[in-house]
Length: 352
Image (cartoon, rainbow, N blue to C red):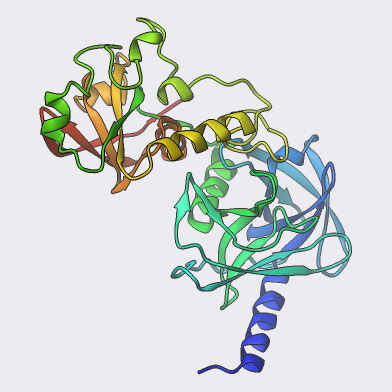
């Protein structure tokens, strides 16, 4: 068993290694930036109010970072910094639940780090760092015990929590921004509403009891008719769809710190929803299929119940919207309950 002294040394070495590839970005307030390529730095988008920003290197040089593009979905912006010769961090894996993670930032006072535990899963495209946030940590590197990059940090998504964009997603965002200046937003073209499966129920018994709507906006345990024909709220059903700019990374625009994927009112609604239906299973009933959409091309129909996307279930319609919006151009598999039988349907996520 590794003794405490050896573990402490290993953690310090990992922080030192990561810190070589973390810079200070003087945005609306000083934050960090993670070097992800030759002269390329990722940093939070919501704090960049200009197209150029000073970047301070670990050895104290002040260089100019030019904004190549912003991705509201991940709240990441890519900076191109001429003269930056710092190497990018090697990408790694977060590992198993309970393994140590390190949040490394470079606020104006110098390198700072906090220790966390891997929670074991990514939710809504974000990895919980399990570490204590500190001023200037956003844009820094979340690394494993080997000093490898597992995510780019953001303390402004959910109040009091330090989250990270997983390294693979961050690399994809950086690649798209460097080549195209934007990240396409994925969609399926399915409007949905939730349906609850009691823990002891079977799909057949639920259909016998009329738990699933028989047609567009027809009843169901959540009263789908309240939205009326021609008023789908977008792919996420009553909780997804149109939101204006300035609502945080999952709402479009550049957002505000602490607003994140859902505002406080929506988070409270989701919390109450989960408490009310704890112990059962939640599916998403398709209440409208957009004409010409990927969902229509894949053969989805009104009344289908979506049970899982790539093996992971849903607890709320907003999760479907959130989980496909970062996967434009990819193929996903949806587990569908149709006619009392479960089946897998593959669908290409569209772009817009």
